[in-house]
Length: 122
Image 1 (cartoon, rainbow, N blue to C red):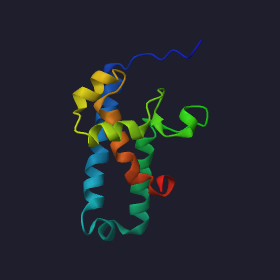
Image 2: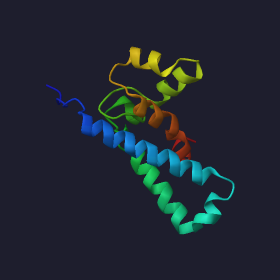
Image 3: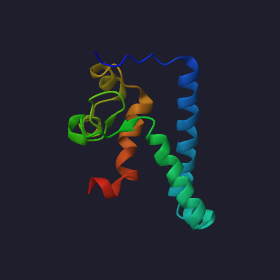
Image 4: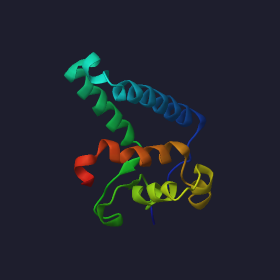
């Protein structure tokens, strides 16, 4: 039988929320016109690695799951499906209604994924 995963507890949710908030703040800084110049190349690369690591909490790509397409961790929900749902105008609540295992943080990760994986998706 498949693996059993414990539901998230309040501490897990707080950790995720805190990590997402930090990533969003850092991303805003990096996306500013002079973000990379202010931080310097080395700091910029470190920051981008940290953001990618944050995505790794929610996104995985395994050959045996959906032919290796990036999916929400521990599901068979492809990142591309979530992106298409949002592009079609679906709200977060509607997406979560269709896929109750999703959270807003997981949807955010799916939407951010292409930004940090351009070389893999092109």
